[in-house]
Image (cartoon, rainbow, N blue to C red):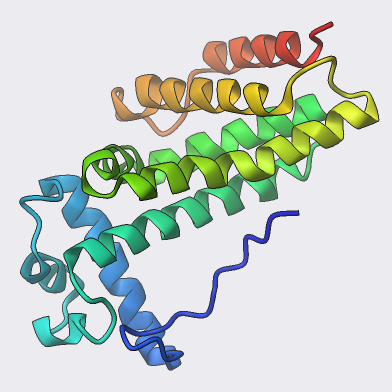
Length: 207
């Protein structure tokens, strides 16, 4: 199974951080999430990030080499957290269909709390294409494995696990954009959730 445990935080010199150092690094990432989402990558600056984090500008360089480095680490951090939220929720499902629906619900909750995820991933297409690919590859990695296992257990029909994973990922992302991001809502409407369930069942029961 894919390891979702966060790696031990290190500074810009690669050395493991103290608890206090790890807390400062986390504040910088939280501030970067806010600044990149509000201003966009090109208008964001290290000064604005450190101001939002409440730390001195020089402190930034103890943890990150520059603006691009903190942006790339932010993509990794958001990706790790959304995958953890989805896996934790989907593991409670008794069947693959239940696991799918619980995973979608967790994804929508996460994106409602971190709407910056959408904006930052779209910026990655231009700022760091390798991180855009990283984000989707990591999301798909465990998903493909889970669908392959479901197929072997007879909980999914004659599906291609990789194609199915990307199709369902695309559905979840666009539905979240339409009913969470654009509506500035905390949850997807019940009617939409019901339709997601119908679509998931149709996809997984493919003959």
